[in-house]
Image (cartoon, rainbow, N blue to C red; front, side, top):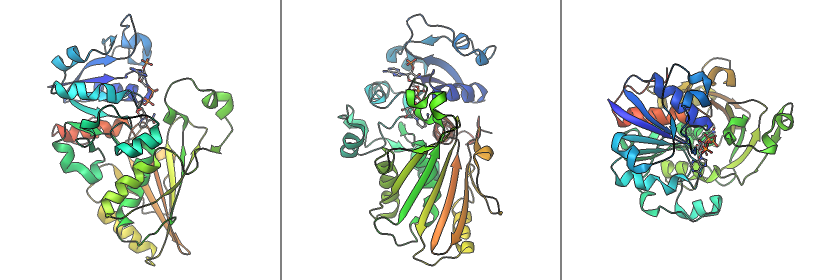
Length: 337
Ligand SMILES: NC(=O)c1ccc[n+]([C@@H]2O[C@H](COP(=O)([O-])OP(=O)(O)OC[C@H]3O[C@@H](n4cnc5c(N)ncnc54)[C@H](OP(=O)(O)O)[C@@H]3O)[C@@H](O)[C@H]2O)c1
């Protein structure tokens, strides 16, 4: 049985990984890490794991972990993952990185993350872990850059039609809303209960760091320069992302034609559900699942696509385990039902 580790196991996506991996039939969770001096029991930090694991939360020790583990999940902040991913790869341990460190070309990384990349060698080796486009490359990868949460919802919402519609600058507008867990577990005044509860606001309008990731992947898929206008919003809920995507309907497609394209594109995908009824996607149908739900309306001259995911599952840890399942040749749904 393969042994795996979760690095950064006390964060929101780290805890989700631990939860999924403890239920997984084909791997053993052998190590969890965070920055503690005294190696507390994981179940003492998070009592919901009592009677489920006796692991202690260790300090990160690449040498020791790579001796026992075949694969590590890096659930670390961006700029931290790139300081350890290369060390694991050198020891022959596969890496699935949930941070943004291996998702962008170097110039874009510098521009949006305001830091020089420290592991230039491994950027081109990293496979973008969106199974719906890269399943074959994921099978043979040693390092996966797990997609961002907003990009997962937006890219999946555009893939089936992006090649068919002729688009120029400013013809895709994305309005996304995320729950607070998208920003991680660290303390932040703007994310405190009293600031968020009962409120709703936009932020980083057209300058958010996930925008170049969407543009980069969609441009690669189409061979064209795809530009996106992206405005994220903070919802007063804990988890979930709902993206509303507006595309100018230049090809004059009707609703049935657009649905047909989505149904065909995703017909064999285990975790994308095209909602063909009069209902549209909603957070309560995807939260705590690894599904991306997509609904479509073609009205006036606009194709409106609504795409919903759980940011911590299909937008992070669920997708990371889906990638591991593909890498190890397991059932892609294992641990994620
Ligand atoms: N939250 C989401 O919805 C989401 C979605 C997709 C991708 N991601 C990405 O996934 C990564 C983890 O996100 P998260 O939301 O789980 O973050 P988080 O809740 O802030 O957790 C970060 C984890 O990393 C550890 N850590 C922080 N600084 C560290 C350092 N300098 N060295 C070693 N360990 C450190 C933290 O533990 P200690 O501080 O206790 O050591 C904690 O376990 C991020 O890169 C994030 O952008 C998050």
